[in-house]
Image 1 (cartoon, each protein chain N blue to C red):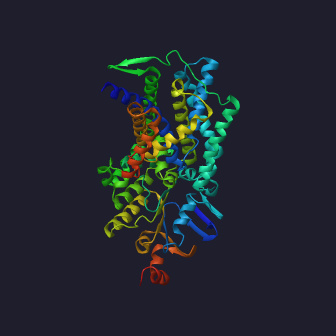
Image 2: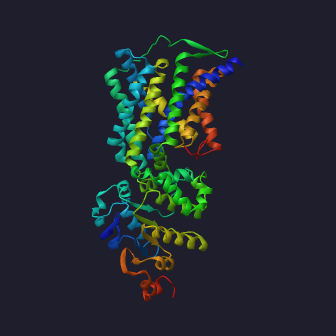
Image 3: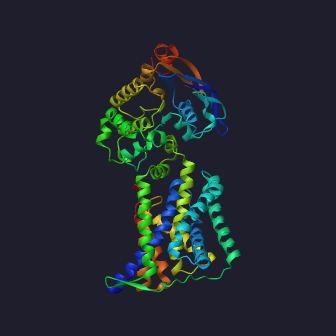
Length: 288
Length: 234
């Protein structure tokens, strides 16, 4: 029983970070109908940014998100303005080529400057654990989950309660009608990509104390984020949150009870089963 | 107030508007009537800048609208209530109304405008927490008009507000349009319901296959031989 609870708990904790990656992807998709296949690379950039700040300025990874969030927002906004904006309304295959290509360019640029060596970011608490109601929790995972929850709560408040946040949702629900409300949809797209990139970058920062950092790490996250978003329902923020946690828990349980090498297999089997019964995802239609 | 001169527009190689000329004066109800596909909605979409005109000009209070982005047109006081209502389906009635006053300058009047549209449409007040997508066609049309009014329009563009509604509701919607006009809002109404719209309009234009073929006072056109034959079945 302890083992079960233990693995569910670590699954939820890591799932929170997955959710962050998925939410970013789903917001971008919702507003622009573009699937960002370079999303994992944004996570990777976030990891490198954190690593550089840590090794260069000795700033703790969890503190450095104060720098990486605005920096990644700017990167996202720039990508939107210079690249994505040109393919809005274009054929889907053109959009896919653009974002897949962008991902390749980003990972190879990083490889050019930082080589393909695996980097490890070791903090004083990297391998320490906390005791929580009889269960042990990895300290960095617990901190990252607390930060993830705070950011997610803030994001929900923004999307549900502020004019700009509602404007982003309105744009996602009906782009033409949004324009007739006086909503500047180009600005909303810029914000959406900026927020998406900032969330991906934050996720990268949060996992950097517990993950290997290397140029190709993004591929894993793009795939994971895509599964999370489809599982939760394309465009649904709530769905992506739920999807992230479900994937995290599934991976964790499969790793403990079956085999760590086969955890991905169970994620995809679960994914297929859900789609079989709910083709639009768990929350294919929801308010956020 | 608004003047459209020699407006032309093509979807790719297909020209759908040919030198449209129309004029809307302060305080009027002007209607554009015509058959399905005549180019009525396309004219409104050009004024709101949802599509890019190929030539001509659209001037509103001395400003050439064809240089503006869609959101800037709304900021100048031209608000369109689109065809098929286009309610935000996953937002509540209140949220939909709030989006109506998205433009910064109108946010300070939000509470007052909310009050005003609830007086006009008491039904919406009862449904304020309901999701837009779950409402009936008539309720959605009320919400669409109410949402448009939230933006403090000086000129309200209404695209087929009676489409798909029951005869009783159609009558109600036309009453509402007259009431909104009495409150001082100028109206450009596009309709397939020729009889009802000519009855309430000060002036009217008849469009056929992308051209203005006839214009005059609403009452005059109601008596016009061509209009009676083509649209009223008399």
